[in-house]
View 1 (cartoon, rainbow, N blue to C red):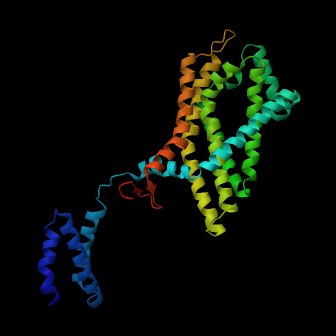
View 2: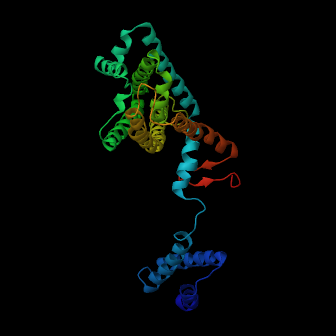
View 3: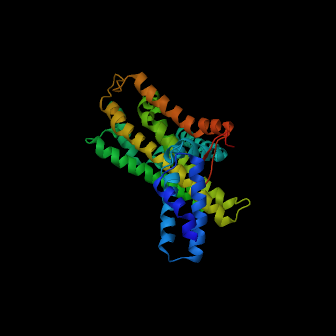
Length: 334
């Protein structure tokens, strides 16, 4: 009686696909009801398997072939990451100010104590740089016979250092702070050497072509470390273990966006800075028009500020949200 009552309906559902979404949904609900009844009273029947196959076909038609408005990859880069940064803007500001303080200490120490630079950068590096400056080749450290080898080495090294900065957050931020201290002092001393020799502007136009992305990315990587530390020290309403896991997850998302930025910075250093240092001479020819290096520097700075600061604020003000599963909630939907 059960089969006789429903067989015509099942045949229609199997062989006549509906183009009306409401009717398709109604068919699916009806089949689920029939399948539940059949599994309860006739679990081993061929009819039960038949109903299941029809229901599965409709389910796949609804969900597997559904056209989504937003691509998951697009949501992650355009919405999820910026909105994540908005949540940690205070930590980002704190990290930037602390790193700036360490750079200032490096500059101040270099001014007050001549031996300070050698203590931070090492005698071998300082002697090499001073010799290059004396020979009219101040940026000789960036020269390499094989730019591609240089590119691979720099990219891998910077990504490795950045991950060390982030992982340092596990030590309640002490490891991250120590890495910032080291890199901040080195940057301050390194940059002061060129300004002290009257090569400040040239060094900015050469070094910061790649340094803008590189250094600011290290600041963001340090922010990831402090995000982990924040999860440990300030769990809020969560248990400390759950807060720690949330912090690690968010920090890893931050590090994901830094990988392509470090690769781009390594490309600039290996090819653009490499070209500029190879063609530099005593007549201040840096191998690239001043407007060219200035444009790269400016666009790099604008990108970092826009993606990590401005875009998150704009999306937050417009009411965008991203759920844990990556589903984008537009202002209209909210």
